[in-house]
Length: 114
Length: 113
Image (cartoon, rainbow over all chains, first blue to last red; front, side, top):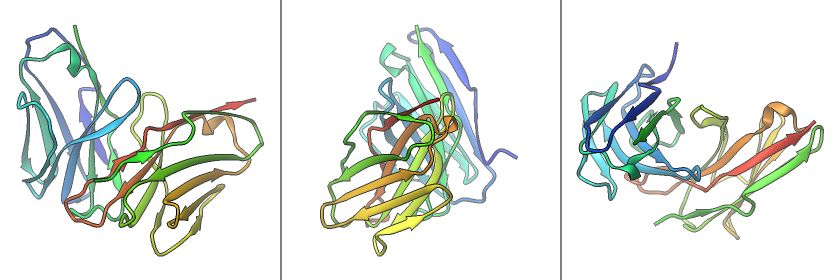
């Protein structure tokens, strides 16, 4: 059983399109995250939700909108895609908001904007 | 805020040798530290963690050392194997409940057979 699963694994789309990435965790964790990994492998937090409530919203263009319908799901919708949005996006979850037992990551969604 | 640096971006070691990957952090109040391994096409995978009340923790073939005085931690891999080839990240958690895990820039470990 996959603990944190993301779909799709690959996403190729044209500039200006709108796309969504979905994430689900079956660990019973309360907190979920979106991280962006750039071409130099740097991982940067984008958003965090705790039990469906937004708790972290880093400096991210408002074209990015996360949604958490329940604590097991955290989706990421991106409007008006730009070339610079190309990256690998990782979903993660942690037992609680503190995160003091580590984060479990999904396998990533590679987004390519052409 | 927290910033995390890494001393070496790439590291090549002979199979069977020991590997040491270093990491520096900036916030002296950080209290939880994790090493992650990321293989090509996969997400970061938890290897070992350490809390600020400890200075050493051992796992299977891996050891993490924490030096709070100089805000430095290291990952030691014993008898490095080809399967250890990956990018390794240190990640640091600050004391606040709203502070997310902050990742270092990563070290690419290449094992030479």
